[in-house]
Amino acid sequence: MSETKIYSRPESWMKEVHTHYCPGCGHGIAHRLICELIDEFGIQDKTISMAPVGCAAMMYDYIDIDYVEAPHGRAPAVATGIKRVYPEKIVFTYQGDGDLASIGMAEIIHAANRGENITVIFINNAIYGMTGGQMAPTTLIGQKATTCPLGRDPQLAGYPIRMCELLASLETPSYIERVSVARPKYTIKAKEALKKGFRYQMDKKGFSFIEVLSSCPTNWGLTPIKSFEWQLENMVPYYPLGIFKDFE
Amino acid sequence: MTKVLMKGSEAIAEAAIQAGCTHFFGYPITPQNEIPEYMSAHLPEHGGIYIQGESEVASINMVLGAAATGCQVMTSSSSPGISLMSEGISYLAGSELPCVIVNVMRGGPGLGGILPSQADYLQATKGGGNGDYNLMVFAPGNLQEAVDLVQSAWDYAFKYRNPVMILADGFMGQMMEPVEIKEHKTDRGNVESWALGYYKERGNKRSLIKSMNLTPELLEEHNIHLQEKYAAMKKEETMFELVNLDDAELVIASYGTSARIAKTAISHLRNEGYKVGMVRPITLFPFPYEAFDRIPASTKHILDIEMNMGQMIDDVKIATACKYPVSFFGHCGGLAPSVEEIEAECKKILG
Image 1 (cartoon, each protein chain N blue to C red):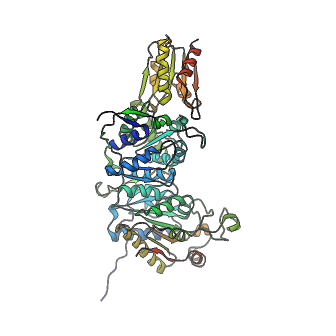
Image 2 (image 1 turned 180 degrees about the vertical axis):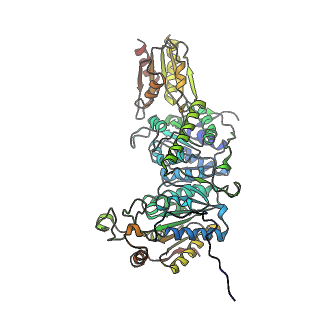
Image 3 (image 1 turned 90 degrees about the horizontal axis):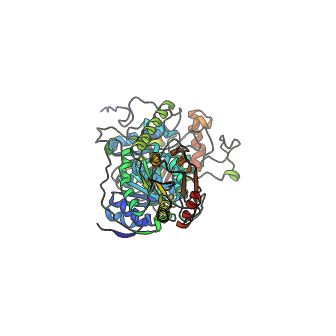
């Protein structure tokens, strides 16, 4: 028996738009996964998100849901304000490594520790993309960036921060997982993790955090294919994939 | 309701609750801790929500999130805390979001002191955060006026979709006075037309609230729109009080607690035959320039009195087009000018 499967753009994807993301960037994949889940859960009319500062600052141009812009790093605080008004709506933040793990460190730690019933999607590509390739808190040791041209030196800049592990040390968060979008098999798992994050929020289980390892071919100076390989060879050993906390 | 004796901070908090405030986000700082303390105890009794933010930075962004839903949200802080909130305040103004911010001012700059001051006049009225924006700034002169201004603040905030700041000083936060706090029905306008959370009500049209615009022409257009709002505020919303102005030879310009002290000095001086009056701005933005047009021909001198080093004096000079000599008298750092000092300064000027 044959089965017909239609591949189409998600309904919650803005009509007739193309992203500004570079070829090989993980943002487009992560955006698509979010849209697919919004469609599957049927929650387009009650999902609210915040545009971060960084490459995804204009993600509201691609995803057709309610949006408010958050100052750099403050999305978890903004989400707190929204969710405390609307406990029944679905609220998620989407933040890069500079936004979340550097300037927004206080906001993410405390939103997690309060157990805000939100879903946080953390895109880690180990670099500042939008501003042109500066060192991020997640830049790997030896990895070159425009503000560490000889490679990250731990004597000068310390070691890269592992956000999942850091947040997993808190008592309150319900669910913390790290995934990747470097290969289709990882992307399928990434979608499962995001799905769980949204489902837990709908079930009022509390704070969910999904870190998505991503690639930045432009600022890494690699081709899209090479950058996926680089991610798996270099980032995954330092940022191991898997579940760090799950209340279930 | 009859008058009750209340501490200023608590009167401000209760007034806010009676005006329909549902959400409060704040971070402790002296001398205004009684506001969040009161809110944490009493807002939940009225079905509202109090959250202590991890910082002023987080608190104002919680305010931003809640304001984007069109609810009645509030925060309070004191001077260094307001500096930390300035990023969020600029975003709130740029994103056209209504909220109420109370600044119980203390001495600065930097950590300064914890005693009463009016050292944030310029920060409140001329910016603080980045960009061309203005807050509506109300400076109550006594606790009853503070109660009334807090209660009406959301009406203005929603009318103009702009943050409103109550600029009080540490005296006002700590003193006790009899106040009457009535229930106040806030007019939030047509919130569904712009706020988050009304996707269905708008016929499956989402809300997008932001301050960023990378197209220069569009960003300029947005700024022109903001300026039109500020121009409307200047035309429609100035508030001021005139005291014994008619035959005044010396006019005091002062606001808040320093104006209150000056008022006592004026009554003493009048009893002694000195012709002293006062212009007291209640809205510091929009600044009531037209109030100074009422200064009579008999006036020879203007005396600006503040609990800072003279931050309002430029506005007074603009308002009077430098027609009169303007001088400053005041104290800062937590000190207030005394009635006797003001009397002596006025007598010195009048000769």
